[in-house]
Length: 340
Image: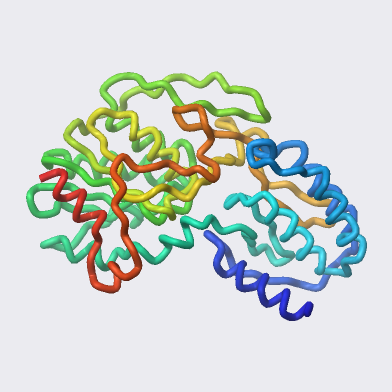
């Protein structure tokens, strides 16, 4: 039975949103009870959505403490895995002794849409080879009918701060622009800001951001440019759009020239740190193992978190794996027709 259970855990790990190579080494200590206590207390102290998700965290202590007591060596990973799975949070994860990240929970909408997008299908709609930005992480070009297109591969590091202005300058004279943020892996607030402010002509209130239950006093978004793009824009999203991609979507929805097309995003708003880097999500357990749990709560403009709920599109267009196999991108086709 244990062998079957470990196999299932391995399969879940491989399905995770972003998972490095997993290396499990022999335990150097047996502090399993201490690790469990630290993990349980960390979630209890900082996780923002226990009440929102109606999770009785106290009752789970009685379930998992005996399992931690009976765990031998690396069996504690199974306990941590199942404990974090109770949060049903696509950001929550733990690291193995070898450093690999394991995400116990995969959002259902990501599972639905993870194969419903293909860059190879998208390229069929161009009559020329798409360009790559200097970082190699933005694919962009002008589609027929003078419609611009830019695929943002993620919001990590600071590549959008450096690359996006040049991409937008190249696409500046198009009749309309498609920003494709399907299949996102998350990233930083700064990268989101580098994108959204290039479409603003006036200041915009930021969505609410709570850190450990306290609402942060953040300045307004201010327009950035040149270049500034004011022609019609379509943002493409799906169930794999997640985390920073969802933040970008929610902000872009507030702009008058923007229409969001596709399907509801994955639903992950438990941020790992504040804008100044405090209260990080990574947490070191007594044995040296670590877990990652969100410490901050980001909200939509309607006041609700997008955790679980996601960001709905303005216009829902379904795209399936079967469409991809047939060489069609219905969401992209709708965006092109909308901008003609």
